Every structure is written in structure tokens, then in C-alpha cells.
Length: 167
Image 1 (tube, rainbow, N blue to C red):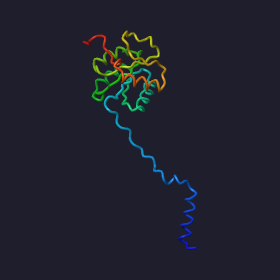
Image 2 (image 1 turned 90 degrees about the vertical axis):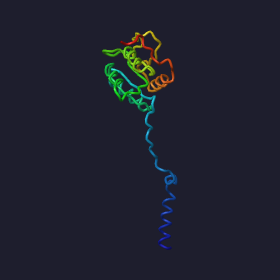
Image 3 (image 1 turned 45 degrees about the horizontal axis):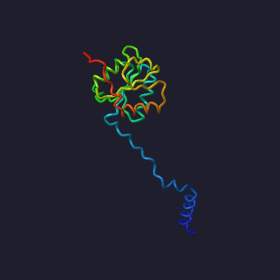
Image 4 (image 1 turned 135 degrees about the vertical axis):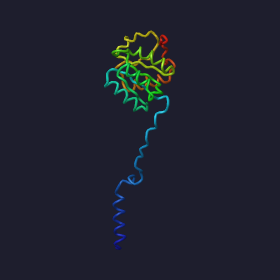
């Protein structure tokens, strides 16, 4: 037997015994996630830092651009900054030291009248606001968070109407 044909025969035998799909599949191509478009920025405010971080990570995984603050004053600074020009949803805890979530939402609605507001609370009765508001009860699952945020963007009811004009 010709040494060239013997080598070819051995190669053929070796490859014939391997998985044929191995040679037909291209390696996976990683495509970068598209940059969030306008209308997808969420400001998360909660005085419990681990919860704030967890919610931010979950919202980021859903494709939202997320900004975080651990209190009302920090949230106001973010809203006033240039980088926060397009905040479309305020997701805030109701009970926080200093400024309460409903007070923050009142101020925020003057600053961003077209934005949505979604409250979260471990004690839903703590919301002293008598207006109809969107509320996500703590603890909540990833799926409940996802549904509440999507509903907030889809509903006119989550546009928060300030109680009184600010001076």
C-alpha cells in the first residue's frame, strides 16, 4: 500500500469514528447586548443597600439602565445630575430614614412629570398616600419584579400626580 494512501486511510478512519457534528458546528458568536434605548432608565431607591443592589442587578439583566440611591437625598442628587437626564421610572421604598418614599415621589414628579413611579414596601399599610399608586410588596420574586416594572411602563396609572405644587 502506498504510504500516502495509508496515511489518508488512517485519517479517514479516525475522523469517521468522531462525532460528525463536531466539524459542522461553528463556535458560538457572542453579540453584545444593545445599549438601552431611551425610555428604559430606572432609578432604584432603598435604604437597604443589599436589596438595592440585588434589584439593580436584576433590572440590569432585564436590559434596563439602572441608577441607585440609598436615600431620598441621594436620589435627588442623581435626578439633578446630567447623567440622569432620562430617568423614566422611580422605583422607591416607602419607609426610609429622612425623606419618605412618597415625599420623594412627590418631588420627583415635579422634576420628571412624564416619568413613572413604582413603590415597594414590606409594609404596604405604611404608604400614607391616599392616591392610587402602584405598589410592589416585599419580599418579591424576580418574576414579580419583572411583571411590576413592565406594568409600570405600560400603564398610565403609574404616572404620579403630585399632591401640591412645590415652592
